[in-house]
Image (cartoon, rainbow, N blue to C red; front, top):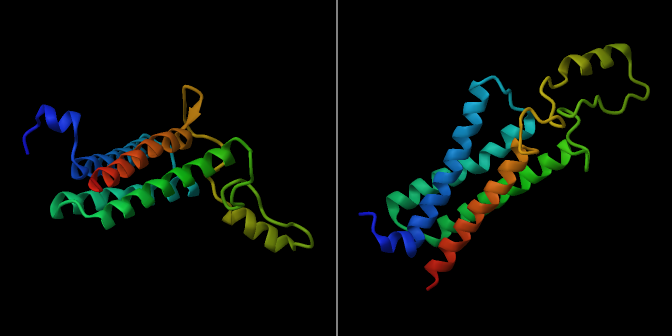
Length: 166
């Protein structure tokens, strides 16, 4: 498919869906790049990767099979899940709400806990904390950037569905 002015000014639903899935693939690659640089992911960081992997796979299917509304709807759901997970993680980082005890430094309820149980909880505690951003750019953590960019990708998925209804 040649790149023409029409494709840039009036992209097809297929092109929009593939671009959205490509964006998810790029975000996933970025997360893996930061991990390779030594920024270990927390439990919530790993959770945020799954919707992007699903959206990228759906875009590959659309590229191979042609535009299918059901695949685009699933891509939109994946992008919205990415937004939700990233927004939740951002809220944990900002202390707007508590995160999972396993990655927010909590040891759970310590009332009437034996010494052995306490030591077991300490040994099993997650090393990478979800409530402390590993990297911040322009005042926003990776989770916050993921929420913003994922919202844009959700918009592309939604636009592909809207254009397919024409």
